[in-house]
Length: 189
Length: 159
Image 1 (cartoon, helix red, strand yellow):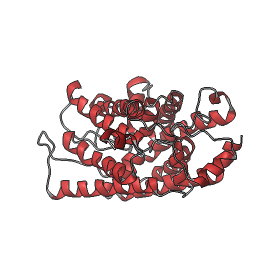
Image 2 (cartoon, chains in turn cyan, brown; image 1 turned 45 degrees about the horizontal axis):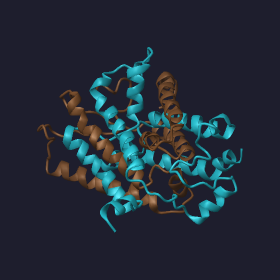
Image 3 (tube, rainbow over the protein chains, first blue to last red; image 1 turned 135 degrees about the horizontal axis):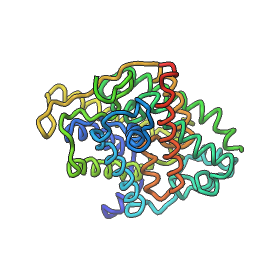
């Protein structure tokens, strides 16, 4: 197998996880930046629609590195999808596949399931909840918690901060409650 | 107190450097972001399916990713402190401590709901759009609206 073919295969967790972990020291060393992504959403608010809200009155330009970082993630997503993409469907566990089939989700060709997240589905109740309400909860919840998976679960835990452990546990509890108890009802809509 | 912490807010993702980055200086972060986005896509971390498997306890994959990322991060931060490693510009590396408030519980639970619905945290949203899932722009705008709404009603929320 050539190197490019190996790169095109889905990467295992023990490659991806350490590479993500390395982002922590890289950002610290190249410019004293603490890893955190949800803060970019706050900087976008501060730059574009600060209103008269004190929470958005700060020197967002000093934090503009974060906006370059997320622009990079967007471009990286493009490169990964268009130049290094795995031509096969996403492989999912038989348990999940059986469960999803009961909701009519059978297309695994994209990382984002097109049967749930598409412009057509946006106009359905199910699609609206998943695309719009879900996004709102992500933005509201991460800022209320003071960070997301990167800021708390990775950066905060790396620095042994117990409030980040509390936040991470709550992320997981929320996720379990939603995925196991509430999402089945949303998917049935 | 740093400039992000007006009224007991957080300093997630803070720039602790004293220097202002120029546009060319900021290109470094664009490059790190690109690398990060490629990892997101190639390990399928941005896949809604992977997140469902995680919350249905059907696969070890995401636990392995997050666990090994935290392990590498912890060792790195430990070494940076222990060896007193400086930034490339010779500055002392500063990491803001996180202070506890109830927002980490309430906000954490709400983010958990959103994470399981959308299958994405904020970082993956940007990468998902990059892969061509254009409708996720709506999810991103909604997340920005959620952040803005938090800023608006923040003082009325329990913290």
